[in-house]
Image (cartoon, rainbow, N blue to C red; front, side, top):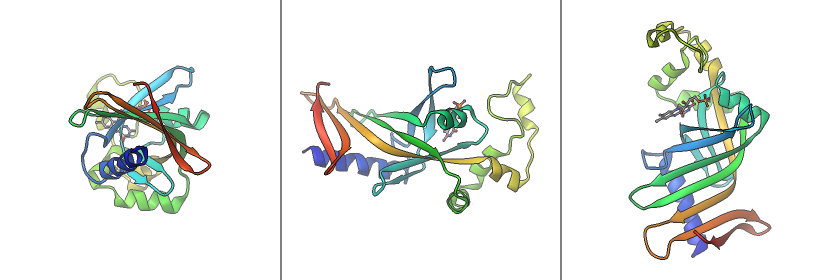
Amino acid sequence: MKQALLHDVWLVLADAVKQRTPFTLMQLATVGEDGAPKIRTIVLRSFNEASTSLSFITDLRSPKVREITANPCVSLAGFDNERVVQLRIDGRAEIIEDETRRRDFWNALRPHTHILFRSALPPGTVLASPNEMETDDSDPATAYARFCLVEIVISHVERLDLSSEPHRRCSFRQGLHGWEGRWIVP
Ligand SMILES: Cc1cc2nc3c(=O)[nH]c(=O)nc-3n(C[C@H](O)[C@H](O)[C@H](O)COP(=O)(O)O)c2cc1C
């Protein structure tokens, strides 16, 4: 039963990166530079079951990149309102510097995603008005230099199912013999 649930989690994550599902967007929490939690929405971009890792993309200049560099411990949370299932994931994030991986990922993105990296102003810069954002620079090499691929190696998964009584909460960690699940009080 527990292994079937874990298998379902991996399927759900694999699905979330292929098409829009409730877990395509997840909330990513980092430890802020001031020691307080910071949370924001991200798009899951890839999932690798063999290495149990996820990835997302961001702007290299964004605060979350500095936060991850200082402390790689991150958490993700998502909720499927139809299945009434919550997933919580803990892991270690790494800024991928391997040029081949970065380039391959960049090349697979849609052009409208490349545009997100064209702002000359770093994310979080104070603006006098939203129109100031029009100061784009359009050089593709500069946009690529700002592109950041982040990989999260999963260390803990928790699945909470509220769809029937009794509610079911199962926690999974990697043990000596692979992933091991435990039922916990919801
Ligand atoms: C639907 C949605 C999807 C988003 N996807 C991403 C994403 O994949 N990567 C990202 O860096 N920011 C994404 N954002 C913006 C972040 O939530 C956040 O506002 C921004 O990255 C700044 O975060 P930071 O200041 O903590 O670095 C998304 C926001 C929304 C509403």
